[in-house]
Length: 310
Ligand SMILES: *[C@@H]1O[C@H](CO)[C@@H](O)[C@H](O)[C@H]1NC(C)=O
Ligand SMILES: *[C@@H]1O[C@H](CO)[C@@H](O)[C@H](O)[C@H]1NC(C)=O
Ligand SMILES: *[C@@H]1O[C@H](CO)[C@@H](O)[C@H](O)[C@H]1NC(C)=O
Ligand SMILES: *[C@@H]1O[C@H](CO)[C@@H](O)[C@H](O)[C@H]1NC(C)=O
Figure 1 (cartoon, rainbow, N blue to C red):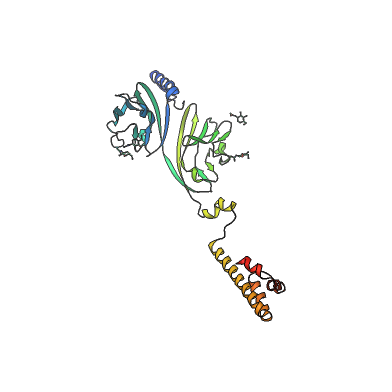
Figure 2 (cartoon, rainbow, N blue to C red):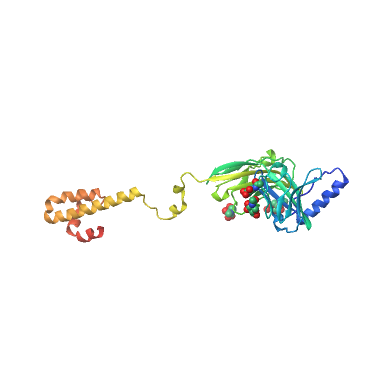
């Protein structure tokens, strides 16, 4: 709501009055849009306007204005905007540039003001599970204000530069921090611990002071999967560990070998107990079960054991 205020040091009374007026108007209906340089920007209120002759104007710093688009069935670009805007139900500038930053006035019955901030961004790529560092510095010596970090218009982190109180957005609890010496050196670099794939996106940093947001900075973060995601898959840790294919094959081979040996020993033992006694002990030892002394039970009561393995 009250995110925009005009310059706090206007030189002329007329300007002061105008600034005050703009500020008051903005308090009730103003909208602030943040966009990253080069991204498309849509002016949402133009979509709900159906008044023929409605227009969107950009206010230049010398208080004159230039046309951006006008409504003629659909919104059509004004001179200078044709290469970035196609006729549409709403005004969309395809590639924002730094000169797009400023105040826009939509005349559609009443006047509606929109402040557009075009923010230069850097990009970082972080591996899931690791920590991300977002560099940000601000003059904190004796200054008041709120340092805010947002993503998709949602709070990520907030630090009250006067009290030092912090708050963290939903989903970012206990994961965000700034170095404790921020007050002395102005280093407000934000650390985000344990980055998750869903943390990707555009992080917007600014300082909010006396109804004015400033010192904008943006970081577009990409999250790459951890190199060995299979090993870290929590589902595989909670579920009973599944043997690998090689292990399964080895297990089957050993089982089959054991069954064959026992069956062979049983058969042989029945035919010729004295000769086969030593073979049985060796075979059973290879299968990891029993010693020579334990072998007689196999030969004495073999049928249930063999059936159980088969
Ligand atoms: C703007 O972007 C839209 C969607 O990508 C595209 O269809 C349109 O042709 C673009 N218009 C101009 C003027 O670049
Ligand atoms: C027209 O607007 C819609 C959204 O309102 C958008 O998806 C589409 O890309 C726009 N078309 C052009 C040509 O800009
Ligand atoms: C900072 O936090 C403390 C404790 O949570 C609270 O008592 C104090 O009012 C807060 N200060 C400000 C300026 O919000
Ligand atoms: C954050 O840490 C506090 C204190 O250690 C704990 O009570 C709270 O549950 C934690 N919140 C989350 C979302 O992990």
